[in-house]
Image (cartoon, rainbow, N blue to C red; front, side, top):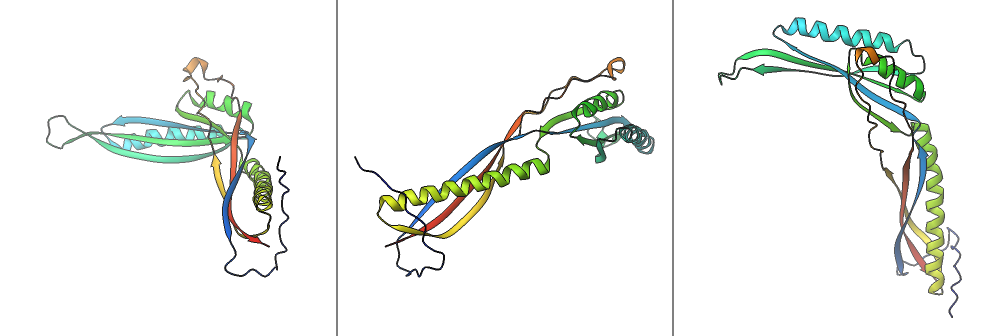
Length: 223
């Protein structure tokens, strides 16, 4: 039976001849992060022959929605993309028969009950595009920092194991830290609310996302 004793890293200032053997290796670490931020996109879309009248109608609906959202202090709301495109006749003459316009608003909050309630109210006049749960920026950053520490320790452990198996000490010559991002959860599916049911919406479930950090580097073997 052969016992492998992990080697210790050499001091940073150790002199290293350029002909020292090197080994490339990599490790990674993943940690779960709670999806504590809900994000939803809703939109107003309509068509009409008069582009000015159409734009006025859509803008009024979006303005009303933003005013409603301002009543929810824990929810952040902002206007989103606006698209207008012509609807051509079917006679093949390239004649514009009408216009279609779509305007969006985006809302987000860590207060999931309030976000769910607001979505229900907004669906009285807007259509729901999608709802997704994700880690808030500060939540994700904390998970990335913890995963980085674990990944570095894994790298050191593996480097020591390899060098020890070869009867050598080692020194880290290069280290690269990269975020693997996270696997976003599937969008939350919520049924569109009718005018009579606009006061209520399905509850939002947070769940978790996996936050990953990868470490790649090179070690130089010492006698």
